[in-house]
Each structure stands twice: as C-alpha cells, then as structure tokens.
Amino acid sequence: MHYVSFGLIVAIWGASFILMKKGTEQFAPAAVAAGRLLGGACFLGAVLLWMWWRRPATVTSAPVKWRLVAFCSLLGYAWPYAIQPFLVNRHGSAFIGLSVSLVPLLTILVSIPLLGIYPTPQQVVGVLGALVCIAGLMWDGLERSVPLRDLAFAFSVPLSYAIVNTLIRKSMRETPAALLSLLLLLFACLPILPLAAMTPGPAPALGSSAILSALAIAALGVLGTGWSTLAFNQLIQSHGPLFAGMTTYLVPLGALLWGWLDRETVTPLQIACLCGVLAMVALTQLSSGRMVR
Image (cartoon, rainbow, N blue to C red; front, top):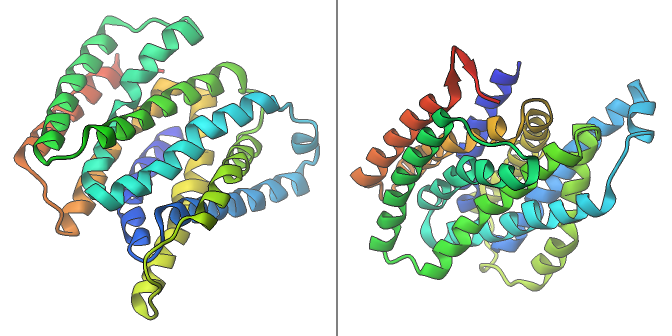
C-alpha cells in the first residue's frame, strides 16, 4: 500500500506547482497559500471526525508535543507554502518545482545529527550523483537570470522539509498522522492568514479565469495539501524520512511536464539533469530488490 501512496504523492505534488501558477493568476501568492492551508485543514478535519466517530480514544488520548508541532509547522509548512507561490509566480512552475529534488540529499545529511543514521555507500553514491545533476539545474537557473536571492529562497524549502521530516520521524511517531497533519496545517495558518489579508493581489476578474483559479486552489488544498500531507506523514512514520523524501526526486518530472504543457521554457539541460536524477533514484532506492528505508 505504501508504494501506491508513494506514486500518488508524486503525481499530485508534480501537478501542485502548475496549480499554484494558475491560482496566482487571479489571487495574491499569500492568498493561494492561505487557500491551500484552509482546504487541507478542512479535509483533514473531516478525516479526524471520521476517526473520532469510529474510535474516539485514538484521537482524544493521542500524545501531542505541542511546542515541536508549532516549530515544525512554521518551518516546514508556513515558510514553504508562503514562498513557493511567490516564486512560481515570478519564475514559472517548472523551474521552481525542480528545487524540491534536494530533499533526499538534505534528509540524509540532517539524519546524521538528529537520528544518528549514517548513509550506506550506495546511498552516498546515488545522492551525490543526483547532487551533480541538481547543480546543473541551478546553473540553468542562473542562465535564466533568476536572482540569487530567489534561488536561495527556492532551496531553503527542501532544507526546511528535510529538517521537519526528520523531526517527525524522531519525535512524533506516536501521534496519529491525521491529527498531526491537521495540527501542522492549523499552526501554519496563524502567520499565513494575516499575511494574505494584508497582501494586495491582482485586479479581481470575473468569469472563467477566476473560476479556474479558485478551482486550482481548491484542488491544491484538498489533494495537494490535505490528502498528500496525511499520506506523506504516514510514510515518514512507517518507513522513515528518506523513503518518504524520495518522492521529491520524482515530483520535478511532473512539474516539468506540466510547465511544458503550459508553454514554459524547458531546456535540454533540464531534461538531461532530470534523467540523471532518475538514474540516481533507482540506485539509491533499490537494494536487493527492496526499497531502502
């Protein structure tokens, strides 16, 4: 079942960047972030109510480390959700979607001090090979005149994901994934909702464009944030942050494809680098016919 969740997360998150782009065509980036958080929270709230109706004790007696949840929410949800729509609006969904492919590399590095887990030689080779490919993607961004500040913002996102994913595996495995996911989204709403209220957006438009943007945000909230956050945290708790984080090596393929379909520029260098990333994923993931946890 976890392989099915892995594949669905890849497919949904691969489309999330084009959904952000479509959302920012009619709404401010901060409003897109707020919309996805609220949509995801509503979905997870319904899931939690269903869990409580079936087995109340699984919800009411679940242990919650509130300070750690708040920290992880601000670092791994509020910051990425605020900055990604802004960057997508400025530089396109395909290019910004490539940055998340750094998550597995950073997860391995973060797991050394936080979990005391050292990578296997096969993982080191695979991740370093992927890093070379990602360096090519960064070079492609510099050739497009993407400001260094925006590149730094883009690559701060996978670092925050890696830290939070590792902390969830280390310290929050006993909290049900649905409850944990809902709390993470609700805490992230605290800074995002005021930001959305204060940030001006594009001139309001009526008709099909506004409807499509609203539908994009709704899909981003329910599927790209609500269900995917739940499934991803379940993978972290059951199979570890590296296994779950490997989804982000494949997400850029979807982001690149959707960007190309939306007539964004896709260069041969990007395609070559992503093919290299795929090869490194296979090397890192497959060990004696099973996934590396």
